[in-house]
Image 1 (spheres, each protein chain N blue to C red):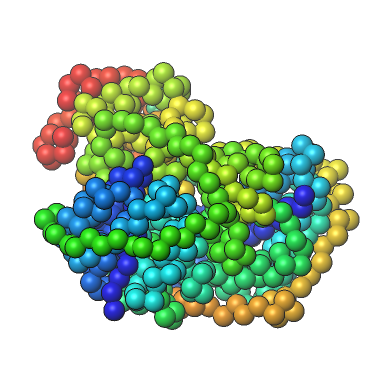
Image 2: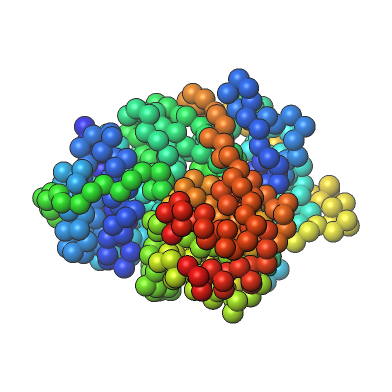
Length: 306
Length: 250
Ligand SMILES: Cc1cc2nc3c(=O)[nH]c(=O)nc-3n(C[C@H](O)[C@H](O)[C@H](O)COP(=O)(O)OP(=O)(O)OC[C@H]3O[C@@H](n4cnc5c(N)ncnc54)[C@H](O)[C@@H]3O)c2cc1C
């Protein structure tokens, strides 16, 4: 049996990193067919991922905004050819997959970090304070995978692309608008370096020193929930249990205390640097290098000297 | 317009969770339990819609043992009108699919126009029940909401997505799941806590509702994650730069 992988697409384009990481996980389960709800160009990009043996392109207008109702109905209509339905655990994957699972009367397994066998998976629970191993007894396994836990599949493949003819416009929802931040920085969840700021940064204006250090290092910008709630940074930068999960080579946390919900999103980073003026801040318990100091002195100096 | 808001009793978000030595679960003895924070946000949103004259009744539902009565009473003290407790004493976490089936059967009975749920429970972190309920009912879904407006028989919802924000409209009846920035839940006042004790609360069970809640997943084990060893404190920016450069990290 083969695996259906729902590609992550936004604005018609393929999110290559997320899709290629999920392809690595999917390939452990069987030959991979990728479903692209987007453009021909996105399908061609998906066909380029090694580990992908076929690409299905759904170009219909019902799918162009990846609305859950339409895409889930489409997946349901082709599901009998597959043993597993997989998606990266992005906001799109998390929106659609549980709907697919319920349509098929099976459980969804969210945020898989390890494929133990075709029916057994590891996933974090309690904000990553425990790792659960679960075995699915369902006929079709529906799983979302945490992209930071799998290396992206390499490129160079040339899978055949075929069109999906059916069009399922369920008519329950409609897209109005996207407010997507455009940035030249690397994508947060796949960046090699992340510089993150917390409540300690104090204001939206001062948050620019966090971005400036990120730019100096060619990295992405992250934020704690408190920084987002206070309006210092936009919501898509939130790292944590209920935001994005990152595992860069280098994570620099400035003015972040290190609540478990934040650690859940970054503690798998290779090297963690913490800058905090409170020497008892819990972030120091996970930091490889901790500096007890005022971030307004340290960060500008790092920008100058790195 | 009637709104249903399901609430789950979970380990309080401030508690440091400990895995049991038998690797079968986490320690729940003498641990502070609270309403799932995302569910507080959904109850708050439902109450605000009522205060704005859009909703007429807010019904909260909890599925769990008798202690979940407390969670329902909290929601009633915040301002919900009545509660339904689906009693389950088995002491195991009920899977989102089963929860969605129970809720679907209550929806069939209650005929709400909107069900607002938290986007995820902070214990199993599945992020699934709302989407599953929407599928079972054949309703539209607006997940991860940071703004909800009800107009012309639709919910216009701004969603927190990976790239930023997305606004969609869903026809009512619909499912909305809440994200952190939708609102700040109120604290219940003492008089309202007293009043909540008199609000109607009925009990039922999954058997009475005729819903099969047998799990589809077997939990083989629960383990502690790999412990990260704390590193070192550096004394100055120069030392930090030296360490980062020596390690080849920058
Ligand atoms: C359901 C739920 C989900 C959540 N999900 C997330 C999530 O996904 N991600 C997340 O991050 N949080 C999440 N949280 C919130 C989390 O519990 C914490 O409240 C939050 O992470 C705190 O952010 P912070 O560290 O920036 O702020 P604080 O805890 O206030 O810490 C600020 C730190 O800055 C330091 N500081 C202040 N000034 C300076 C200075 N000049 N120089 C250096 N240091 C300074 C202080 O010493 C302090 O340690 C969630 C909470 C709940 C209830």
